[in-house]
Image (cartoon, rainbow, N blue to C red):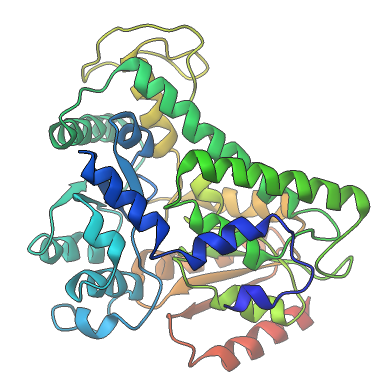
Length: 412
């Protein structure tokens, strides 16, 4: 793998290298052992599916394979060729039955973040149990109520599948579990902003990708161990790139495993990637669910929110409000208008010290392709250099990407 060829990698990456080496081995066995004991496995594609609810009901949540092009031929038997590579990738994996994670799931939880996925789930439902959450595309009081109602509907479906009832105690425990995971990733990714950079963008991306399917307790402990090593590197002035190397950040569509192409192109040119405004990046770990300060066992029901921002969610209804709020405040390109996402990109660029932004979009990904012009205009207004790129999972454009990114860096 391309990430193993990098010099001076942190020792803490050894755990994540091992996880990748066993990507179709030990973790899949853990899922099958869980199922053998009566547990359920939920497959997901999107950040809007609340892991807290799944694990609070005794389930395991895993991200599904969607980052290669070799499964696209099977997908194109049912789906159009000029469709997002991510959609064709996951659909082809299921149609060809070549993804053990897909085969291990009891339920695939989809979402309406784009029309392509929404319609593809109809075909997918003929091959596998699928539940689709409705994600509103505008943000106002009415759509927040709609999203809250969707959360309750999903809870009912998850309770039906697992045969368990969601409790305040279990949800509180799992909110804290996943918040700890997010905070560990926040610390890791903030260390990338140091000079010299203590960890490569490829390695950080690998960690962010593994977050979607590894055991959360084990994963968080491994990230915290890596963070401690990187903090020592910062104190010692140790980096994986020369000090003051021109740094870039990316924004746009997610980098589903094993899609490392863009980072490999950039970093083999000598330019560290220090941040990703992406679902496999800052959007995944941005913010946390408000945690309760006082325990309660009050029941929950759809209706008026139980607490206001800044207050402590002291009962199950309030805690579910906090879950709904955290996930609805993620700024995906599916929303319109979307000034909040533009703010996120500018803010991340300033904090990370990036000299420019590579706005990366998968071919035929309509929401991000159309929004790319808004990103470009806002960044130019802020005086931030930006390069818009669209690509797929193939390696045929590797040289072209090298040329364009090289010219972009020279212009900085």
